[in-house]
Length: 255
Length: 208
Image 1 (spheres, each protein chain N blue to C red):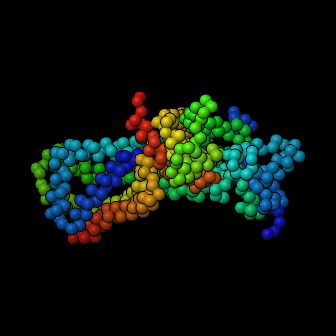
Image 2 (image 1 turned 180 degrees about the vertical axis):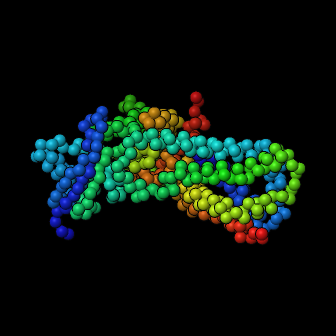
Image 3 (image 1 turned 60 degrees about the vertical axis):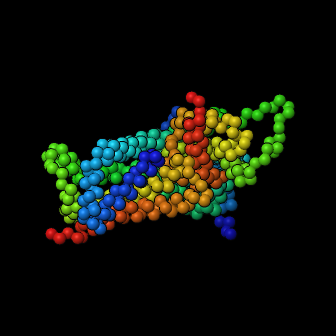
């Protein structure tokens, strides 16, 4: 493995705040190690910008180990970049070549307004979650242990797989319709598959889908792009399950 | 989209079976065509249902497309969509509009002629005219060319539409979904190919 640094041209979306009109800016970076993560490469850029007295590029990040769902970025036309099953923080510069031009944009969706540069406001997802992504548990002091209820292993596994969603928004960013259905269906499925989720099942799917539409996300046309780009490998099976839950709720609900 | 899609998938199969009859037997084709053209149940119940199904499918398709475009807002400067989805799945509106344009031509071609024959010119019933009419229409190379191109678009539309309809109604199963996808590809190839075969058969067997 050679440690020869890479020279890169970066085209990055710069936008002062949510009200300003942004534009693409071009930056040159030299001597970038292939062992760096993508975010470390951006750190190097920001250090360079600060030294030059310029405003650093704002981007979201937190844990930098692929579990928090904070980092985003649409890199060279793909959510979380060209690699699969990872978030941007786990994308390494070895995926790129010396002399490459890398285009970096924020998630694009009407429901995700840009707040600054590469940062978008993803609180629409929080509001969907608040609309029904929970179970009510009586915490009177004699709460039953969840493990006391026997659960079919395959259902438990599927529920766990759905719960692996970190809510990063890559599905919305990558979907040509800016649909949030992979996210919403994962959050519905993790409960729909478990006995604890049955109590509020009818209202949950109804309220979450209603909130999803209200936020201005698009509709699913089954292109499968979300599943391909999802860092956690959330399956399209969840969207089918959400559709079943939705039909069930529409038939069974009182009003 | 899915429910009207299922309905149209079924309709296509029926349409193709009748067309295929014209390859095997002139009489059988005439008998069935006459039945489809004069049976009151077909004419005044099934035909309006079919038209409603088609209109619903295309209006909903366009509404869906407009809502989905609005949901994106600002588009990407660089978007590598081919990395994660098929061309067919992303361009249902394009293949759909091409099919719609064909349908308009097809309606003028056959349906308008039928309306004129039956109601405007008020000709007497002639249960033996259909095969000859079809055979004559398919003698024109431009005509056949348009039909063949239209069925290529239909094939592309079905490549995504068939399996997508199952997913939309919530049918996604580890065991059955791979089979449905294979069946969808088969349907998307064989059904348009069947229509093309009938058109070419008539074009190539012209006696005059």
